[in-house]
Length: 192
Image 1: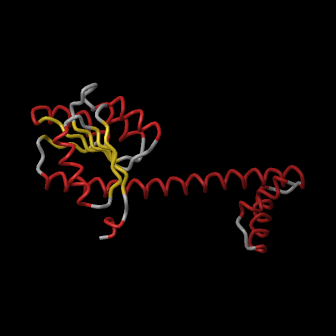
Image 2: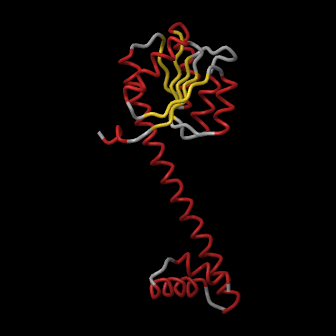
């Protein structure tokens, strides 16, 4: 499976040593993770200010917070896939809070098989988020090129008296003749 060839950075936020040991063992068995561990929301936020993670696992509650806000913020504000583990009696209530933000949630105590399945979901989510991010970047690049070409057309209109259509065709013709992008031609026109 292609996903197993990739490496994922994981931040575990949990204050329960037994759970941490079990989870890090499961993650080590999968062999495709770089894993860090924090025991509270405050220390996790400090680590997150220095580094982005593909996956975050939060074992709630934590000594300094319940972890719900951290899960929502990380899932909404980055390309991180988040799994929140909560006590069974709070599952339904917290599910209503976090599911609109794309946070996965499991009731505690989860079986090893269920956590493994959840890691599969998180990996799939990471891949989807990476594709969306690439698409977003390419769309932003395309929009930047359009703005640049429009500026170059404006330069041609004002300096050489061309119409908008003539300026557009002139840029396209130069790009085709020289086998370069319209962006390169537009940069040359604006720079001259």
